Length: 100
Image 1 (tube, rainbow, N blue to C red):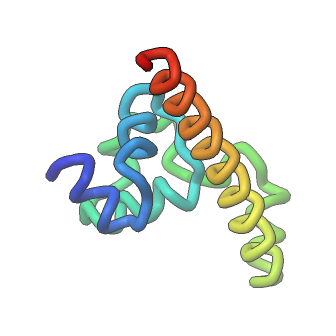
Image 2 (cartoon, rainbow, N blue to C red):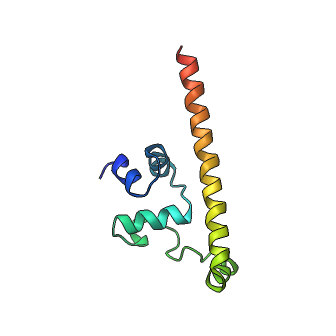
């Protein structure tokens, strides 16, 4: 599967998938989506922890207790992803201006 194929299936950009491959930085929701699409399991991704919430037991409790909190967390993670994508766009625009 190409980066473009995966990006389409998880409704992300190819540049984000490339960034994830290069750096290993990924938010929990995106990782979960990729694992589902690839019909895989977390162990195959060389994660330090199989439990996505093991580093924050309080967060796990919040998500379990109220679905609203899960949406708030997802929104926060998506905002972080948007910020990152804006930075990529800005960097690409700078590179284009330098080439002119």
